[in-house]
Length: 547
Image (cartoon, rainbow, N blue to C red; front, side):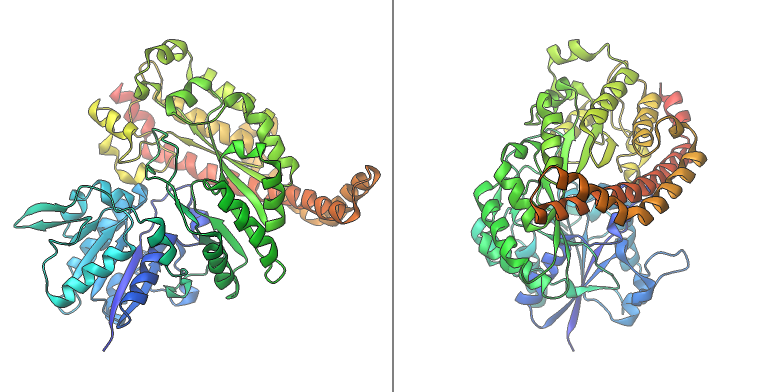
C-alpha cells in the first residue's frame, strides 16, 4: 500500500492582513516541496493541506471549533510523514498546535516523522523541537526533504543530511550552520509546481516564481540570500503548463520581479506571445525605480501585468536611510505616476513607526527624535495624497525573526514576547518603540491612516456612515461601468489616441473605478475588524501599565 506524505500550511492568526487574500490562493513553498517529493519518491503519495484556503464545499473536514481536523484526516488516510510550513510568524501558534495534535494521536495513527520548514522555523528550531517535531529544515528544502524521508525508509542516521536540526539524547543537533540555498542549476531542474496536489482548496490566484533572493539588504527583511533565477524559457514553460490547466490569474512571489532585468524582459516578451493562446493576468512585486525603464512598463502591460505591489516603506528620508532601503524618496511621487500612466494598478506597501534606533546612527536620531507620532502621520498622509496609489497597505513595523532589526531589539530587551506570535501581524505593536514615541498613539495613527485612505474625506470619522457610502458607491460604479467606458473613450478619442489603444485604456480606466470602489469597501471592513481586535485585546491598558 502506498504511504502518504501530508504537507500542511497552517492557519494564520485572526487578524493577519493577508487572510482574505489567502482564501483565494496557496503558498508556493509547500507546493514546490510536494511536487519535488512526488517526483523523487514515486512510491510515496503526496497531498497538501492549506488551512487558509480549506473549503467545506470541497470536502474539507472540520472539528467542533470550526478549524481543520487532522485527527479525522488521519483516520481517513494515515500520513506516515507530516510536513509543516512555518514561514509566517503569525501562524506559528497554529503550527505548534498541529504538531501537538499529531503527537497526541493513538499509536496506530501517529506519523513516523514530523518535519518542519519555513523561515521562522529555520531561525527558531528549538521552539518546534520542544513540542516534539522530529526535524527542522533550515532554508530551501525541496531536495533535502526527499533525502530525509529516504533515510527513514532505509533506517539510516541523519548525520550526513546537511541543513537540518533534530534532537539527539535530548540535545539539539544542527547539521551545518548555513541555510540551504539552491543554486541556479538546481532551480533549473525543479519541476513545474503541481497545484493538483492541493486538497480541499479553490485556487483563483496562482503563485509563480522565477527569482529567489534579493540584492537589497534592508534591515527589516529576512530575505538575505543572493538572487538566483531560472531561465526565461523554463519560466515560460511553467506558466504555460499551469495556464493550460485553467489558471488565469498569477502572482509573482519574487521579492523583485526585475532583479534579473534582462531575464525579466525576455520573460515578458515570451508572455506577450503566450497570451495569444491563454488569457491570463499577473500581479508582480517591483522596486519603484523600475519606472525609469519605460520600455519594460510597456512590455508589462502587453504581457498581462495588471497590478504592481511596491514596497514604498516610508516617505521620510531618515527612515529610508535607517532601513537601508535602496530607493530615492524624492522621486517616489513621480515614479508612482509613471506606473499609473502606463495603465498599471499600484498597490503601495508602507511601514509605520519604524524604530530609527536600530540603525545606531546618531545623526539620524538627532534629526527626528523631536518629531511626534502625529507629525510622522501627517507626513505619510501628505505623501499618500500626492502619490495616489490605487490601494494601500500600511502596517505597523513588526520585527521579523532572523533579521538584524530583530536581533537588535532582542538584545535591547524591547521585544514584547509575552504578547505572543499571533499578534505579529502588522496591525499590533509588539515591541517598545523608540524613546519619546507614544505606543498607543503609534498604534492608533497607523489605523487612522488606513481609515482615511479607504473612506470619504470628512466621513472617515463616522464608521457606519462611511460604510454605508461605500456600499452605495460600489453599487453605483458597478451600474455605471459601460457609461464610464464610453466617457473615457470619448475623451481619449478627442485627444487623437489610436483607436485600439483608446478602447483598451478607456476600459481600463472604468475598471480602475470599479476596482477602487470594491477594494475600498473591503479595506474598510478589514479596518473595522482591526479596531475591534485592538479594543478587545486591551492593548491600551497593556501599554499604559508598561509605561
